[in-house]
Length: 132
Image (cartoon, rainbow, N blue to C red):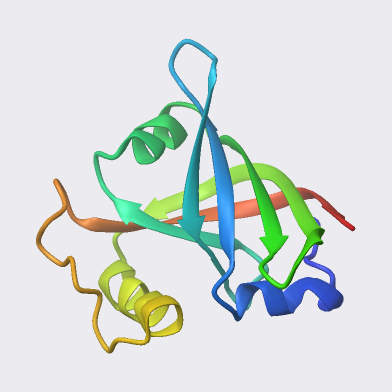
């Protein structure tokens, strides 16, 4: 597992959008803009609803990539390749509420109950981290 360099930790504390690449069943890439987070163990976190395409893709093939661009400087970025360590419902609702506070400046995620399935957190183990 490779660590996120300290000089890029700020990207996980602001309203940074990442592009999350997963693999479709036919092997073609599927890319989705997502909110991002990182935990104290160095895993990158993506929150979604069970049954969405990205969640189905990572259950079938855990290899993923993320491209994270600094919202203040588009030439500063972090590229991460890794594997999904787990997909869990544990604390997923609390986590999306935490992200909503950061990204939307609201106390609670406003779309609870609109998803097809329960919220899940995708924990990604970074195996390659490249910044510029």
